[in-house]
Length: 359
Image 1 (cartoon, one colour):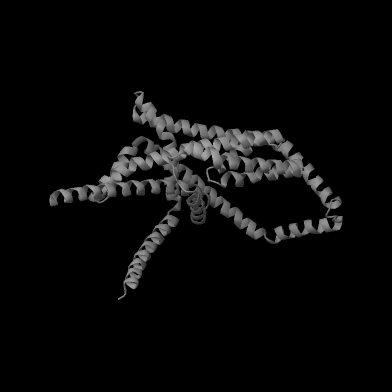
Image 2 (tube, rainbow, N blue to C red):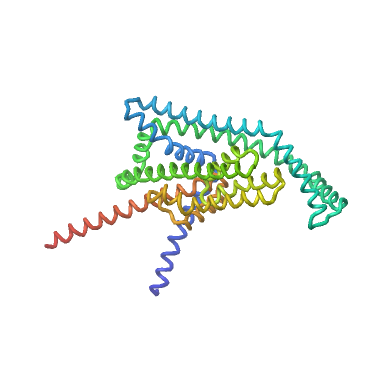
């Protein structure tokens, strides 16, 4: 058998085995995606909160109390942010509704008197067609409403599961990691015991850096929205902050909501373009200055890997998949690098022993 054919055959069956294994893993994740995403989300939140627990422990606070205080403080912070956003939206709802109505009237006048020169009958026909389409698809809309209720129940379940998992990771993370190590083959325990702390350090650096970058993005865009005069600038900034957890595109995608509100509420194409320029400028600031400066060398992931990871994560798991894709890639890169260095060091030791024996 030719050497090339033998190598091709051996590579093919190995790739097929890897493909089957990945398919099984993805099927299991898809079946248990609520549990999987809750566990990953709990890991990310724990990586953000664990330094606070460690600080309290260094100052003599018992671990159970430190974990409880940190966990409750995190819940209180999330609740305050949610209340603040709801308060801002509810207090500005009437003025924004009035501005939207004025914007729609101005848009109608522009369609009638602007470059399109639509007649009132043509505009009414378009409106009637939209109304008819909504009426014909009422069953689909009702079905979507039931689907929305199902999603809301699953979301609530995921939030509760994430909260419980986060608390126990903060309280008993070391013993959970020891239990995981005991479940590995004996010859793999020492390698993974060294890779675990490095992976956790990478995850912590990524989460804290991402939170800092998202906060700066939201602050800059919120100030820009306030200066332009877009209504509900603070709630929009909070939405952009949450969207910034999806690397590269999250803040820009959620920022389009601000562009649409600027266009409809102010009926000004110029203000909408200014908001778009602000979004693009902040994205350039994030990509070229904030990410390298804040994350630095702690999380070294190539931009191509980030783009492909976000795309693959969104295909597999939607928005949650896009959020967890990049930290998983960063942790995997750290673990494989540690194991590669460990194997190289072990090979050097083995070669040195063999050379000494031959002498």
